[in-house]
Length: 312
Image 1 (cartoon, rainbow, N blue to C red):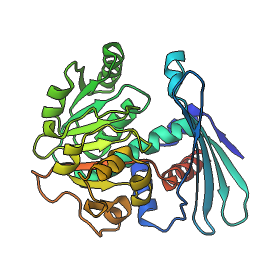
Image 2: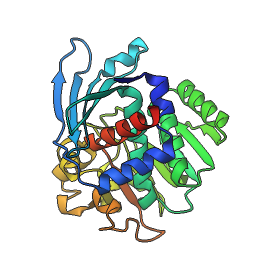
Image 3: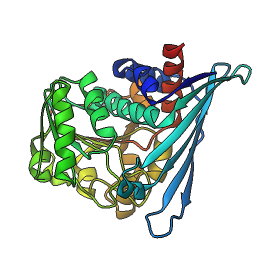
Image 4: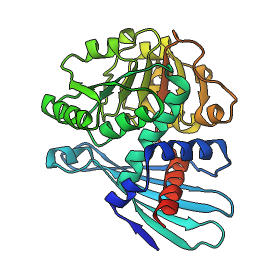
């Protein structure tokens, strides 16, 4: 059985190839039960989450990711998300690979955002604002740059020091990059705003989004968390990775539906419809678009298969 640690998993998942692997998987048939989502109490800290995400393609591959999310780990200097992925043959059940789930999750999550941006962001989008300074931040920069001509990168975080550190790493990767102190000012000029936080309260307000902006919402993976306000949903054409997941688990969608700012019928399309050509995506350069992802097990499967085939 192939075993890939974090470094080898990263190297086995080049971003452009990963975006295309996700595009192919969303366009194909894949069995994907809604993920198992369990709340785990941690005394004296925010609740933790246990996630189980299975997926399979008949007589091809199947796999399952086991992931934990411990928000309290930030205070301990540890990663909030930890995971492992087991890839198996769907033809005979053979165990094929054990893959670092944290790196797989980070890479495929960013790649899903990039896949959405390829349909929803303006073709000339060159300024990316990343809201959040965690593991996903640099992956999102790399991912969006794989599908759009990103030249300028702005990083905003609650910690100025962490934002500067991410900006320095983005600059080392060849981007013009800087940390921002004023989130509103940064949002107002960005072509793509990509949020990857564990926020429970809106960070990005719809009134701040400029004409033609694309808002990418990656965090807020439970029904009580959100990174955007109702006005963002009112002003934008709303797209999701999967309707089944987003309308049950994504706070940005669920809470907007509860307030009446968004109806389920307002969701324009999901990634499968975009990749299969059932919806073209962005309709005009002036349209504001929103993409909300909560993660789909087929994304993990697509990444795991790519990692397995690259690593063997």
